[in-house]
Image 1: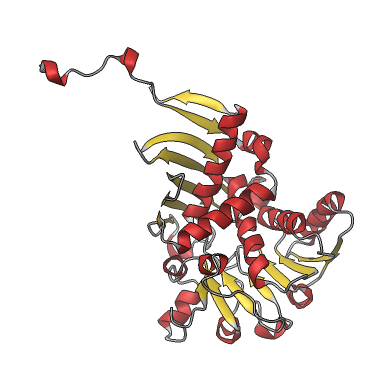
Image 2: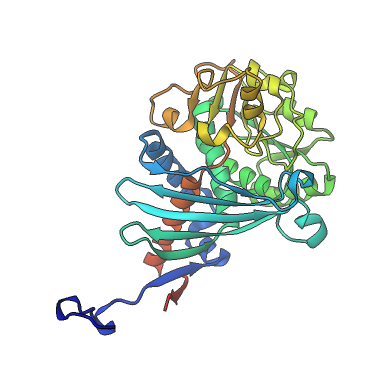
Length: 351
């Protein structure tokens, strides 16, 4: 091909070769990605950017291969996003889940990767293992929300479902709220609750871990309630909730419709993300029983002070966080920056 003199391309010697940093789970832990502080700070910052509309976040598609017959947790999700602000970054989380991975294969339920891109070139700059980030950022959302929506000085937490997500929720809540005295646990498989209690007791010996024999008994004890299940059938009833309870409904399908209709405040992370996929809120919208006008706020609006969070100790408040790509990208970018500074990870060439 002929190239005019003025169109000559620079030689390879003068062109920096594109590279990216690969961080596995061990690398992420080494830079502080196995404790909650990094994630709480990143989530707080990105929720502020969300409230200020400094982001781009397409609705995430769900890849399902088993049709309507498949389990609700059997899917792969693509979650792309761009975050603005002082340190812009783009990226995508590609995360797969099979509900029976733990019982049939001895694997964690979910696995995935996060790819970060430099928005000035759109070249990839990093690839990170996603499951640790995913579980920790989910816990950080509960932490940030509890700071604004739970009763001040709350001491009891109820956890339903005792897998990896629950483990990180317990860890993060106890790291961030030292006043907690009791964690109430329930799992359909008692051995999972026993294992979680034993492991957490070693890390937090001052906390009581009580294993209940029903979800109802655990929920009734919790000032903060965090369901961490893969259920597709709501079961948490309004009458189970004590006055002043805060529910961080991270697994989305656990709370019955009446709770959304009777709660003093219903909050989501992002309305467009929450009102889809025939989750409980979407069902209520389709039935004409709930709307965006009935929503109290998106969580970012509360974090920046645009809306007030909890106003008294009697309010029953529910957060329904679908999980946002900007949260994963923000946390991954914070980890990437630490890894670069600490010279941790494996550098790969694109060429």
